[in-house]
Image 1 (spheres, each protein chain N blue to C red):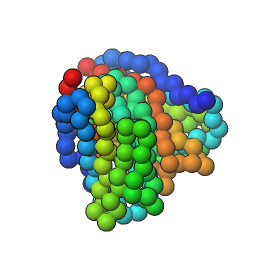
Image 2: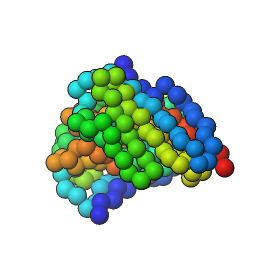
Image 3: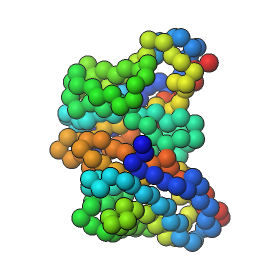
Length: 113
Length: 110
């Protein structure tokens, strides 16, 4: 069966510090990968998605970036965090041959102080 | 511009009664719709889906209805249970991209 991991589970960072969140998927090959953010009391905002290694599509202009160094690894980064970057970050995957359903990881709670 | 909308931020229902969660969309090109359930501090879990070629899909206590002409879908939970209390997101899939509503918080009272 497929599983998706995210770490860390929680993170408290000062403004201006860098960020690196990691997501890995097991049990499948060539997945589509996604990063979402859920701000407090808000819905899910798609940040990035990737259909292959090195292929990243950005949905929202911001100080975040994403990379996909390996087929089942997706990394969300920032060089300098802002207060507005606080939120709940979710990684998700879907099959390329069946893009109908998307499966989410457990999420990372990021607090920028 | 939000292409999937859930206009009710919250819903409170008595245990055993029906819960109806609503969702509207604007893009007629959407061909697959999903409902997710989310508990605090956890990732959303897939609940049920429906293809645009159908108008109803049922799975146990959960039924999703799709009205394409009205660009509207709904999730019915019958009977509602306290464990159903969570935030429910509807989503639409269009060419590898998933568009989510803002969620409806369901509270099922014992």
